[in-house]
Image (cartoon, rainbow, N blue to C red; front, side, top):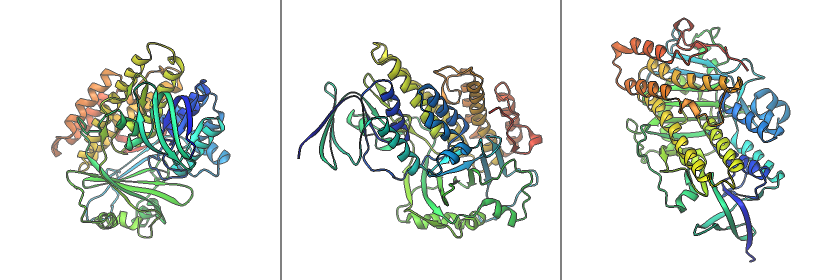
Length: 495
């Protein structure tokens, strides 16, 4: 068979939405680009729930790099009108429900065991859950339209880096060899490029410790119907509780429920690896049934649900590389590290990285300072990860105390909303970090509060909640932590 040879400026391994989007941008910047994909679209992926901050970043990329087709994908209404063939789900905000083992969910009149935070004013301007199989395929096809050289079903067998990057593999047409000046690892957990560089994945310094069990389902009941059947009045809810990233908090973990308009629901558990260690003697299906059986109201929601694909069960999900970039390579955020899907940070975190890396490739391609810019990119990614780790680990360690979890989530929402408002007001700087990770005052107070949260005694919970409210006051522009709202937060921001 004849060897296919390609020479390019940039090779990107991994054609998820981020790798494909960065390929399109690099091509528009005048670089020759080869995009490699191990599988073939459409293929399953999670990391599905977008946020206002993610959509602002997506809109910014569309404007900066003249990608008008991307703009419609930043809000639910335009997406449904312009791309009805790409499945998505409506996300009006975040909803949380605290369950007790063996007991049906009983709503508290003061909403003490539930929390709802609106993220947008209505469905048309709503955020979205991305049905990744179709979304990723669409972005990859846009890369092909942009004349990116795209090779899928490519099994990379060797990566050499003595001078330019040399990548060898096989695809459907036979052997392939790519020579590139710059390489980007967008392969996620497999970290194909990082592996070739000898960079080992580790959990060093990561406080979050959780594992996953998840699938896609048909026939998942609306949580609102379960609540109404139990006598819960929904009149206080600021938006439909199912049009959200819905979180069920349980003993030693939590469950996500994300609904798509095509009848499929993404659902899964994130479980404390210490309190609920992985037991390979139990099948994933059996463990799923045991978890549902322990929580009657969740079991009712999934009583008629059928998985449409095999369950995925992981060992500990957390991982990180020692560095995320070098002189002629970079890893995208989801390759450089992963924590937990708690609070849906993944898409925004990824797009912050895409935006930064695109700017480096565009502004510093011929610049001798490029290596310093890439080193800064790496340091910023891990600063962001470390702050997110503090927040996530504090929440996951205190699933026994809903007020503490609620208070710590306010750190996340405060940072996200503060950043969103700066972007909308035109006050954001190009290098601003995700979740205010470059704001020393905010990071200091967040670290202190998260460290304290792990050890708050039951008698001190009310005082801790007030302490959080006082600490975030300089950043809290939308009235979070207001006890008069009884954990029900309508949208009060600008759009």
